[in-house]
Length: 132
Image 1 (cartoon, rainbow, N blue to C red):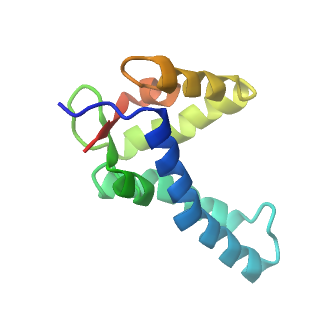
Image 2: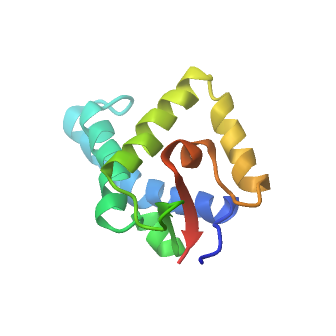
Image 3: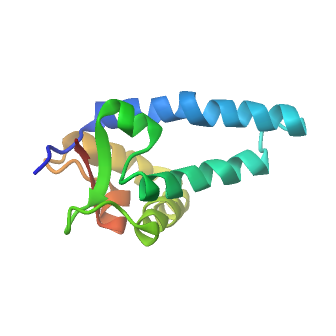
């Protein structure tokens, strides 16, 4: 069994994804469309990245791969599927929005303080983030 990934390594992976993937895509489409604040094409591509890359890359994103962590199903230990990633990103995102960010703050505290390091989006999707 792999060790659970804690807050700082998960944050590092998120930051790497933001710098390596999100920022260049946002800048490129901002230049192409002239809209740097709420450019819909880059938003759509980044949403697809967050859902599809972990499915086809066995739980990894670019940032997670660099940090040596990955998403997997909690019960079967298999990589996530499309349905799992939709639950993890879309449904959990709605929960975070509907709670005005309080759910997101709770998730940060859960990853930092819980022994299993699982956040609200992990419970919604039945996932965990582990080293390896």
